[in-house]
Length: 443
Image 1 (cartoon, one colour):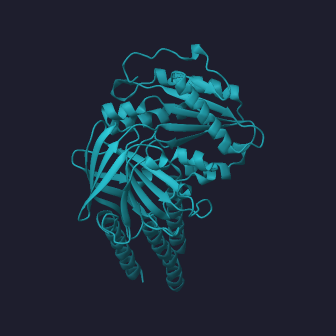
Image 2: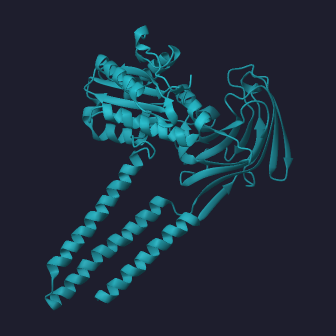
Image 3: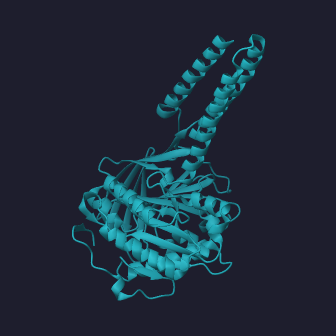
């Protein structure tokens, strides 16, 4: 029997390695919206919302060329490709896809960037008579000279303007793409006026036929079944042989403990931002639901935003930008209390949830963090500062409302010159704006 079990484990180990390799290098699933016959493809300009831009479309096989005469006569002028997947509210599930790739060429004035919007129909808030009620998940990216762009889908975020428009509560602001009815590709938010010629040759969503979670759960179930079956069979054999049952039972305990540890690690990965180690939005929801003390009054929320972070990425590349984000999160972690929660809200925005804390205590913490950033050593010799917005939770106030007030205070801090702290309802003091330390700095 021992020989048989050894063979089973060897076969299971080989199958595990084979599945991992196959999943990494193969098992590819692709949805091509530029070639799919049931998808309507068209273009649109901004005249429907009062703009004066003009757009035309030329087709050549699956390739589409959009000629946009962009006129900056409204706040957010744009021309866009539209890929209509469904008009009934029954879209396609892209939640198990990992990335979207574009084969595109771009000619035009100014910065060559595009915005991807993935619209998700959610029956509890979306209606067929109001297209704007569909959740808008978006990201903006640069178009390189090669024209080949890969965008991970996990960088999509729910558009802030859509959240404000729909007045969505916090628990409804998560990024979801499990019922996508339309995909749009727009000119950049800050595109210069003039003629923009964008040829789109392909737009493809890439995923796996079996998701990582499904594969890991299947492998875990197989190993658990193997781990559970082995001691049972071993016990029968040992009863006949009067052998060393204690040692085998101890081995079973070690295997089960290792499997439980792996399961806990998978849960932690789902709730944590992989770049900075801070909680993600899902992690904040989990913490709020599992830790009642976080919502106990008094409580304060600190919104922190790295000043001019885009210039770091543009001037030094995304690797340096990632290093700055990691260093920023580490500096914040080192100064906050163990019961505070640091959350990466999106991009360079971070949220600090401070239980049992009033507005003045939160302001003192933010000033301490601001001073810490001035003293810290940053990658590439940069000088990095941040703006802080603070709001204290009123009794029985919804956490989403507190976060919104802290966000408004953050915008006030940026309007006041950045590198300062603003408390909701207060005016920043001039002495709070300390001079920047020497070194390479982005204004």
